[in-house]
Amino acid sequence: MDQQPIISFKNVNKIYNNGTVGLKDINFDIPRGEFLVVVGLSGAGKSTLLRTINRMHEISSGEITIENEPISDYKGQSLRLLRRKIGMIFQDFNLIKRSTVQRNVLSGRVSYYPTWKSVLNLFSAADKDRAIRALERVNLTEKLYTRADELSGGQQQRVAIARTLMQDPKVILADEPVASLDPLTTQTVMDILKRLNQEDGITVIVNLHSVALARQYADRIVGLRAGAVVYDKEIADVTEADLTKIYQTA
Ligand SMILES: Nc1ncnc2c1ncn2[C@@H]1O[C@H](COP(=O)(O)OP(=O)(O)OP(=O)(O)O)[C@@H](O)[C@H]1O
Image 1: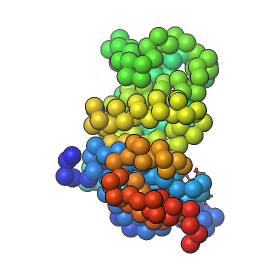
Image 2: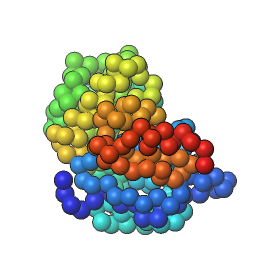
Image 3: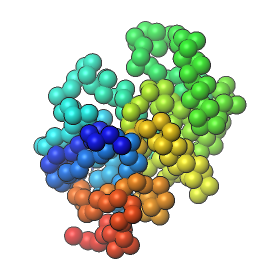
């Protein structure tokens, strides 16, 4: 792994407008190429944490740096470039349900096009090939012309991952990516994320409820409770006692 962290949190706090504490004094580095799992109960701050990394949520104080650059002041083009290098997948897949798999995957490329071209669906032949290669990575090429809403949940999540690959991301953020999937499909989706991490060197940060799943896939686990880090350990050092810390009250 590169010595330089790809993402760094320094004294990060997030207080929502209504006074709710989202994040409390977060400090940690994420090395390039790491598979990091963030665990915590509902409301612990996992989504908030993930969404500060691509500026879907603004922080209240502290600093987040990505590849050594503070991101808080990014706007316009710099913010677009930040979001291009950080892919995101969601619990509910966020596909365009009435469009084909191909259209959905190609939409991951729009940040490389002027708006008018992407609106008119003027994707290049090279990007159509790129879409097929992305679908190969998730083993779903045979569904190229199928409508997204005709796919199972697991297949939809794989399309969402292929769409993210079209960005050529350095980082993938996955917010509860398997929360609506059955156990078998869960393994398939987590295996794909792990493969992209290991084969392509993409830094992957996954929010999970399940500590068992976290143990199976993570290089490192960060436990959150009430917006604060309660432990932050390499997988080999994580104990049962650590894992239960996220369930303790105050
Ligand atoms: N837009 C918002 N305005 C006010 N409070 C919010 C907002 N979004 C989240 N919160 C609060 O911030 C805290 C952290 O929420 P967050 O969604 O990050 O937790 P989480 O660990 O991802 O939970 P879940 O697994 O349920 O998504 C919670 O108390 C939540 O109610």
